[in-house]
Length: 203
Image (cartoon, rainbow, N blue to C red; front, side, top):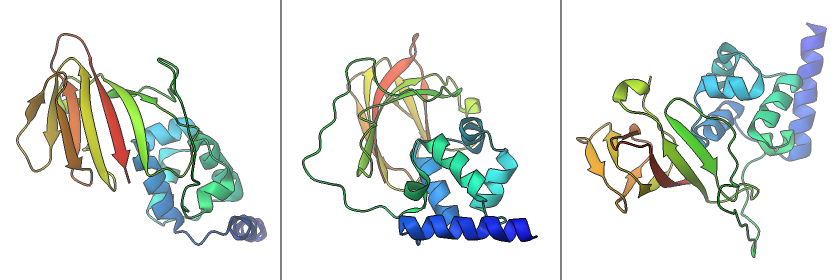
């Protein structure tokens, strides 16, 4: 019990240093959904059990300092940034990603993401080049959904856009879709080769 209290105090001190007043459960879910990670994917990135992550997101447990550190490493940020509310981005920033040199943190059964210009933090949108590996709705255990809006442009091949409230629609090279990303959604490749799309997420 004494050890748990000590760890809790340590977490509070880190939060105070970072100027945090965030709801950790909401912050964790926000960061995970922004990266389009399932709980399983986050567990793989952090080395934490899926059940632990689920309990944190559902406010059934408070993370220790050690858990916070593992979460920060998994997201590629420091602990203070994990706990800190987003602030207005600095002006006059620039980032360039050369062809094929985007950050590829992992591949999941449905998509292979390449995050572009990922060294910039606290941006208003996230640009992603994605190879669509999924071939059917059954490749998605659950709908993808997260706060904000998405805009997806097909760069190569053909995809089918599946969504919670609309009939499936096919998009060929050069076609684009903009949608509310709180609505359940998914993309599958319907061309012979895996389709490639440019994905902009604004949260």
